[in-house]
Image 1 (cartoon, one colour):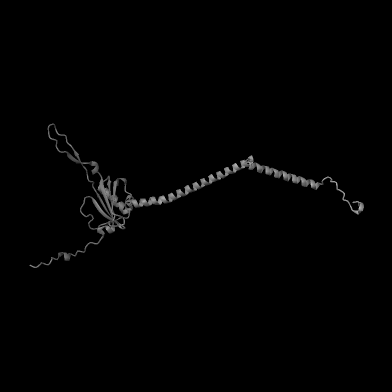
Image 2 (cartoon, rainbow, N blue to C red):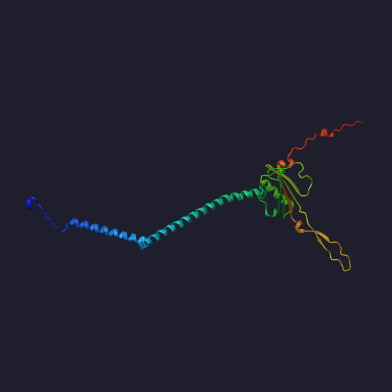
Amino acid sequence: MPAGPGGAGTPTPVQPGPASGPTRDAAGTAARDAAGTAARDGAGSGSRDGRSHPLSAGVGVVRDAQSELRRQMREKRQLRLASLVVACVVLLAALPLYFGLRTVGRDPVFTSLDDLGLPGWAATGTVDDISGNRWCLMECRLRERITRSSREPDETNKVYTAALTAAGWRPWQPPLCPEQKVDGHYGCWRRDELTLDLWVRKPTCTLVAEPSVPPDGQVQPPAEERKDDEDCAGSQVSLKVRNAVDDDRTRPGPDISPSIEDIDPEPGPS
């Protein structure tokens, strides 16, 4: 710098020269950043104006569809699981309930009689009857079964005797078995806490009236009665099963001493 007059130096203006390399790179980076900012501002202003980019809108639709599909699949899985749980509960509850009601409704004594293994001809037209209650409240239970056999009483009685013996019943000969004389075969049996009366006899025949045709001019005679062959064929079987505690024949009878029985009462005052 040359000194001017008076000794004070005057600064010489520097002439701008060409920009160096680093300066150009910085300028380019600033320009690109400005362009990106402008683009983002433009996109933002477009969104603010209510206009969305087509690509972003498509992505949103796909995401919504995927969410809806996942929700539907989740609901279907929950529904299948709930149905499976309900079915298992119904099966687990219904089967014990069914067998329980069947046990309560069907007396086990009749079930054991059904399991005697009798031939088909020995038990047809079976009719069961129950009175009293199983727990002997006020009145013990009495089970009665009446059935028919297509064969004679002798053969039928042998079949029933063998079946009862095989089922664990034992012959029993208490007093009043039977209470009065009857036709056919009558026997008493015991097993555990039960007693059984078996009566096999000829069936009661039905009388059928057959009107006769009188000659002309004569009074019609009374109708003739005959026995129905179908009702008279085979035999009839009756079974009565009682609790032993309710059967009077299981109790000891009164001890009647013959010596006391033979003593005449004292004569009264004359």
